Length: 243
Image: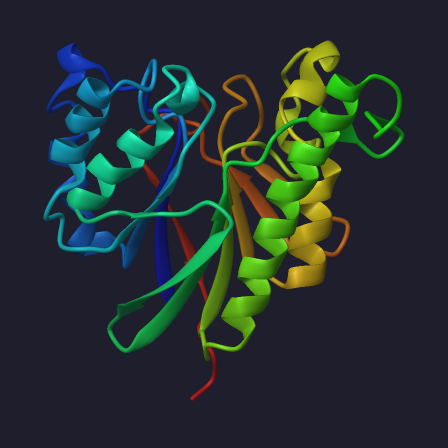
């Protein structure tokens, strides 16, 4: 059994230094990997990223992360990513990584993702250039996720996980105002997950949402925004391949 710890939307700043570290230090006892589903900082500053880096450094389990919209606010996502990587995290954007745990190979494909809405109530590539670019940006994120999942297909993984910040399904947004669903996720991410192939999809962003959902293709989706799970992380158990 593969144990996947996950949390998003921890929104750390200087005054929150050390608040998650005691819980994170228990991870080797209960999890094989820690997934961070974006919005790790409040405003995306390098100073805030350094706080997160100290929380996750030398935890004893691999750490895989994507950035969220808050992590882009200061317009220095590359610096934020570099600081997290220096602390040992795998920071993904349209990429995949494979981490090992007790002989198992855990594949994670990641993207921040973006908005646009869901089937029947979604934006299209039509009209003003800004509107077209909005949807095209989401499509590029989804295409990157799909490509990363397909890459994992060739790497003999025991499980494949899709890690995003924005939601791929409306199920896990239940509790949020309907009016903001288009800004919380996109069906294009779910299409990428279903066609790319995954055993689990993990996201954050929807603080007032619901933990459990599923893509139309039957992939389990979990909203791990910290206000939703109400703890430092939640652990999901995935069966590995039969020997």
